Length: 157
Image 1 (tube, rainbow, N blue to C red):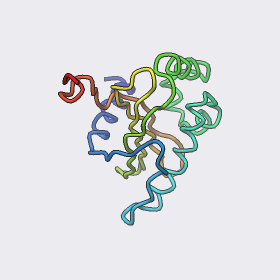
Image 2: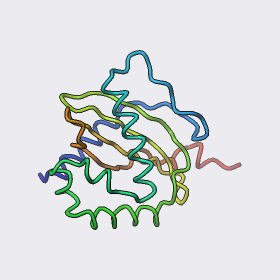
Image 3: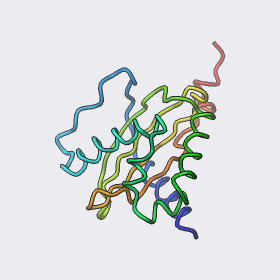
Image 4: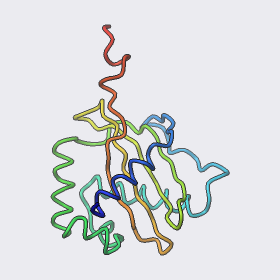
């Protein structure tokens, strides 16, 4: 099993946790009392990096990747091409479905579930895993939910 496949399987397992529903227009959810300092820090940092990722400004995120994560993408040019393809195929974020942070082992995760303008029925999960040095040791985007098969989405008006 390749490291990329292992990471995608891990990501799929991690995003299986329930998410709440949040409007994109709403302010980000306030940290809960149970959120650790590491989770609060990961959430703030990931939100900043994600804004840059969405704007295809990838220098800071690339610099934060561990060598193992960089190896998944090959080069900054390869990572940039991946992101540009995502913009072309899916467009801008349309709806923030939910956010969550949690710690597993020595990694603090931030997962953002959202839909995008060109394919609004698909919920994608973007996950950042930060190691204890603050580097991005896990990064991935995976399908979280396809709303097009929901009975509500399929019912006649």
